Length: 487
View: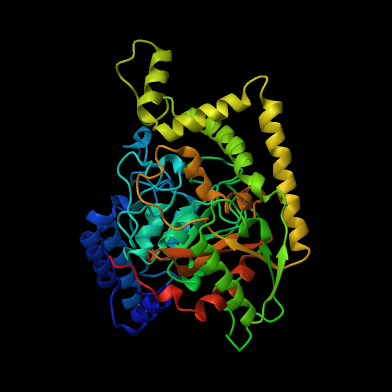
């Protein structure tokens, strides 16, 4: 599988054209997509037209943009001008946005080739990509297992070689958990580092766009392009963006000497933690210590409260954000209703799937008179305590470490009828979103069924640079990232 650097070098040397590279990936999609079903919408004509533009630049001797000729996939909850954006929902099945998400616009301006829009759990609500209104996505390592969610389509597309890199969005683990399940690298940046303009909102105080890649360097290069201030997003941060890729550093004998890594003790004894996952994480800890890192246990007492806190705050924000899908402004409209109220009700009944309805109902209940103080206000207070936990931890160490998920990919259909079991898949990732911190997942082993295991590294605010450096040192001194799925 090609990396961004390899594609760039091939173009500069004249060994391959952008069109030829794009055609290779389109052929790969055609070959395996019937089994994998990573995509909702494919854009081969657009991809080839974009590739031809890159080839014209190369022939003219112009400087190539940083992602020139790199096939990417875009999660289908990011607006793409003139291209269907569905959020995997019947509500938006035929919606074509009149504008582009800032992150997508930056990627295309950097020369990336968009091969299609990837599948997800409806409105990014889920942990398995089984809640899509169109079809579930399979895991490239085992087609009978889920790829994780909600960005499962993007993770599966990268793992399966249907693209080089892909975008994802992460509200409670929706980049890191599928990265773990599919054996790829995924980063959720600091809240506000990447513009949310054009990202269809789920929970606005938690949502963040990030990137997937087969390697730490590719993931860093992609984030480099997407990051930066956007005046169209009021939560966008005005900060200088480091050159992540150039800071990855030389790998000497002890590349992590002096780096303090804290192991979150509450995650290593969490209920439901698979023994194979624990063994792999302990192996990764030992390896990081061999690379010079100072390992120390760290306690985050409120970490376990992340899950119930999230499932009050996120549904509350979702119930407000999804109120716009009423059949009036855009999207699905029920044409059989004989009055306005019936049209609202029937449109939403037809347009939303079971999980979306469940979260709207929870959020509406929590925000209703008499329950706001008892639930929502209390959850916000606990959110503050979780943030304080992390602040205390980062006073002792540079980076925190824990499993990305308590288990490896589970069989498709095994948790569909048990929402609470499904929610536990995000046990290790949710607190990071509540605190607005950056976190990265990278492969660190396999279980007995040959399914990937992910290692999660958590940084302090705007410490993506440090996360990439530590992840790169681990990746380049292990072989896990070189493994290929059998598909």
